[in-house]
Length: 177
View 1 (cartoon, rainbow, N blue to C red):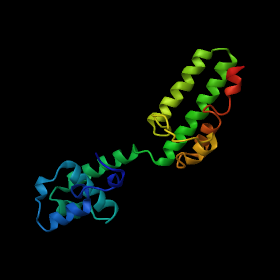
View 2 (view 1 turned 30 degrees about the horizontal axis):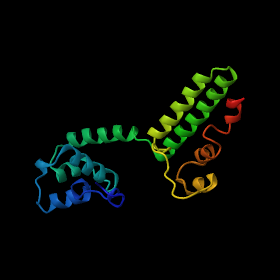
View 3 (view 1 turned 90 degrees about the horizontal axis):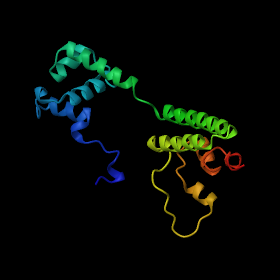
View 4 (view 1 turned 90 degrees about the vertical axis):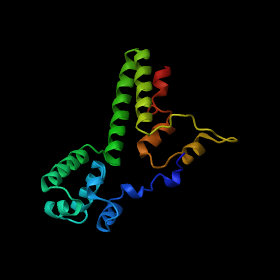
């Protein structure tokens, strides 16, 4: 089982610098590189070192056309990567839309549908990593405010406020009436 300490540590075989040093010292053969290792080296040499496609091809032992193809794949992969800010914006948008729909359904008296919206919102936020999937275990006695203060402070303020207000933007009283 990998500890949290090791979670951010990269294996040497996955480090572009390590791979390039091994290639330079002839410790490994360029032909034996896996596609992922080649892509990693191309990404590093392109972005960090500003090497030309021809220079990269010579270092890694592939053709310039292969370098071009790998760079295209790297760009496509990068375009699909969400930043932490993107994820937070998506989560806030989800909360706002789900809360608006929840309120509308409650006003219409569609309580079962409203409950489903609330449940799906929580499940989606859990799958995105904003809410814990298991209940928080508390040793001893703590007030709700102490629990919130000890909660993950990296969550956006809106999400922490939502947790503090009961999980549905403070609209629980309209659900109960």
